[in-house]
Each structure stands twice: as C-alpha cells, then as structure tokens.
Image (cartoon, rainbow, N blue to C red; front, side, top):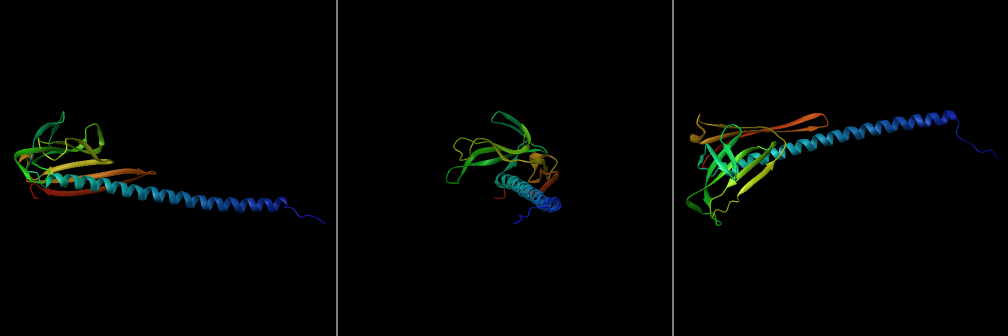
Length: 186
C-alpha cells in the first residue's frame, strides 16, 4: 500500500489560500477595531460635553449674579470668556435659603490642565454646598462664555459654548454644544 502525501504544488496552493483568508479576516478585525474606537470617542466626547452643560446649568439657574473676580480656595478667578463666577444664595440642608448669605462658584477650564473642565466652590458657613475644586469633564478643546451685556456683572443670561475633542485612530472626533442660561431662573 502506498501512502499519499501532499505535493509541493498542493502545499503552496493551500498556503496561498490560507494567507488570503487570514488577510481578509485581519482586515475585518482592523476595520472593526477602528469603528469601535470612533464610536467610543463619540460617546466619550458627548458624555463630557453634556457634563459641562449640566454642571453650568446646576449653578447658573439659582445664581443671583455674575461676580467680576474672586479668590476661591486660594485661586484667583476673573469672569470672562473662559471663566464665570456665580454668586448663589446659600442653602441649608433642608433646601431653605440662608438670608444674606452667599456661595461663590467659579466655573471654567482648569488653569493647571486646559483640557479639563472644573468648578471651584466657596461655600458660606452653614451652607450645604461643599467647598473645594472639582473636575467634572475632560477632553475640552474649547470653552467660551458670553454674556447678554458688555459688563459681565450686569448680565442676566450666560451663553455657553463647549467643544470636546478626542483623537480616535487618526480621526478627530468633536462634540460641540451650546446653551443659554438665565440667571435666577430656578
């Protein structure tokens, strides 16, 4: 009995077919990985942009006014196009307003990292708000505050424009958002 083995030609054809199959499967995996990276970047930029919009709204709605400048927790802030300082009535734990007592919140790009959005709170005594600096979002590529008056301290509305960006495998994903907040609307 004679045993049958692969000929050199059959072996070369088999390797060629397998190579083509691996190239096709590899291309599919690479394309799928790129697609998932882009989808992840879209989700992440949207998440951080909405975090900024929600955070500004949380403090703009109860704010009584915009303050021109203030030192909060050792950092000096000035209201302008990249930072806004709100004066808010202090509140007790049950939600009642403390008469003639105010909390101050500086909101903007973190001075130590221009890609991070932060807010810094200077809460009055007995206020339920927490003192401190908090980073709320990353991937910030542009943050602009505009006011409905030339003098920011006379503003009754603050317009926010935020753009978050992320590089996803050579493609820049951007999420722009904007919103107008009316002070004292809550």
